[in-house]
Length: 246
Image (cartoon, rainbow, N blue to C red; front, top):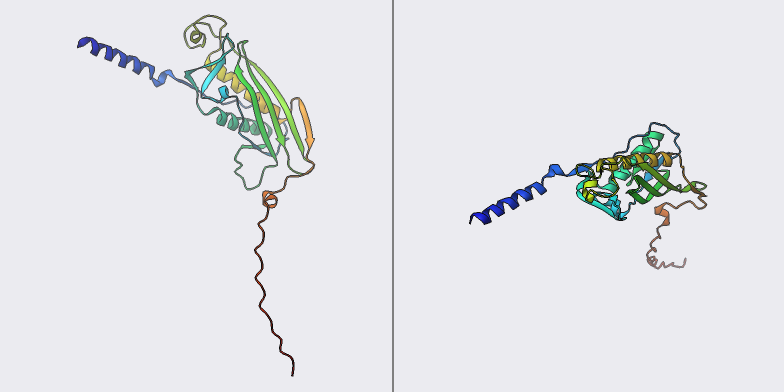
């Protein structure tokens, strides 16, 4: 009877150790405000929810391993939903450095925005080559007649500090201690924050390779673009009898 009880106690201790919340790291998506200030090229703009790759939108910090796979660990989590945090902090960074009023959707003000911004991220990854890469496209639309629309790309590279490929707080221990050293989760978070800050600086000045398109036909207000319901048939008029004059 002693042996089963001892095994049960050992299992309970091991389970308690695995579920210890203090062993789970949560990392903020919080880009620093760029030191440089630029002119206001956007005015008021609504930022649509940023689209991220599935691995970047998940709750775990991810990185690339020597076999080319993208891996993560449940002990290293983002402190907020990545899409929400990315969108909110990007809008804030653009506003802070340019003086524009950029707000994440839904637009909360009575006066509608002059422009809309959409960001589509293709890659947001701590690569095996020691570079954090943020790559994709952004679009700035202006619905007014003669307005300027922008379709531009971005490819931002931030060097990652190398962590020892061994145990400890780095990711090298998670890879078995072999192969190239990989940055720690905190370093990956810092690199991503720096990349978002650089993206904000690029969008604020409408920079990057791409093209510009003029709005030829302004978008109709929804109240005018919705088909009208047919009017009900008119009621027949009552008969009017006219008596001849005597």
